[in-house]
Image (cartoon, rainbow, N blue to C red):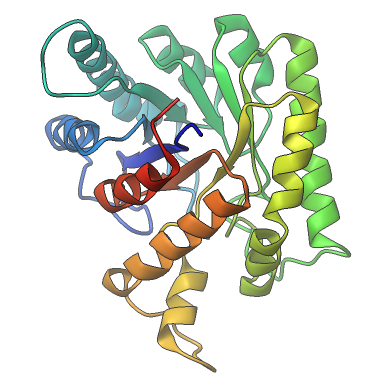
Length: 279
């Protein structure tokens, strides 16, 4: 059985919830991307606009300046590694954006995958011959955690991403992934319910002709609440969420996810290797 893929998170931002400010210069961002490549990441996902709850949008020119140079440098490094004896594995670069102009610019400099939390840019992916991730989000980052409600969270989330996937496939996108959007406009109970029913989404994605399901739980607030114990109203700090991140990534893979999006690449790659060689 082919090993599921590990997507490493690279936030080139000052304000992301877990690692904001750590990699907000070109030099630090590229160095961390290379580090994740060496640790075995299959995809490096570069984002220049925070999507944490309450985050404000940034101007396109700011996001372009943050993202495009880093994507270009890492794409060149990945190509060089693939054509030499350098100790870096083959890896793809992804751009995490909701802006058409940022997506087009990043794809043009070497990112063959578009991670789209708004699930609206499939035509950009189709035009570029790129892969596309359609994620579910209720509202926008600025407002998404303001009392999120669903009549049936499983049916609504699954229906939404599968409908977007259908549109993308019909538009000519050959590699379409779906992501239930854990933590994006969901309560802790919603998140756990979606994880419990992930196998149903994986089976439906297969039937629809998708590449698979992507799941991102890494270091999220609901894991912090679980780590803090029963009745906790404040989450445990980031450094106490690694075990929950790895456990939920493993559970997602057991349920049929084919890619997990994580901050802790090395540990997750070791876990994913239990599933066999990479595709």
